[in-house]
Image 1 (cartoon, helix red, strand yellow):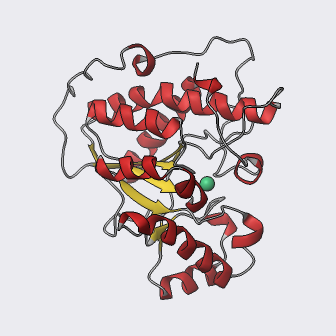
Image 2: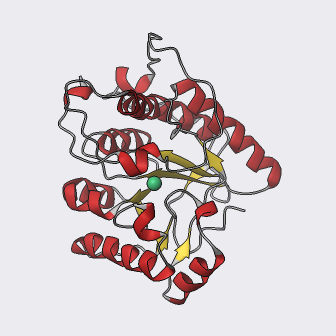
Length: 275
Ligand SMILES: [Zn+2]
């Protein structure tokens, strides 16, 4: 029962204010049985072979925000490993400090990192461009113990929170922004079902194909939250529901992308802008 794990700390900032653009509205009924896919039923079985060969010129970027999380990041990594696909983890420095072994596993298994600030606290990072830079560098100090650094960043709350002066200031210090163009809408505070996530991603990918852009897909592996409490509130329950939905949806999303011939790439300096 994954709910019984001992999560630590602090949900408020990234949970209640969300982390990305939320575009879905429907919420599953509370008693609806959670859909299960191959993620939970065939964990040790090899993934099916891709139905079409991957086209090296047709890239897709899977990105997972707000970890490393002591529980969900590992489940995401298990699925990526089973399908032998690469992804990018958009990490929060304070969570890096809580879960250094998870960060190391991300790197050991060949995935890429993006800087999501140390605090993910809007009051801190949006105080000024200088404060934002300091929080990015604090995150890099946490990552630095692995010998890596992340000069590509994703703004907590999304680009709409950033004024141009921030981009300009950060670019002077070598920081490049990463946005997204396909949202799973998995940060809806009402919680989302696997089907909602799958549909949001499929529709978004098809739109990007029409627009001729490589899909950069936003999902969440999650921040550390304290669910080891007597009566977790609705916000916490919905947050957990959404992370479980992410895990259930991910194999379906990967198989959808493989069927369309995508190559799974990690975000790096050569990744094209989302828009
Ligand atoms: Zn975030």
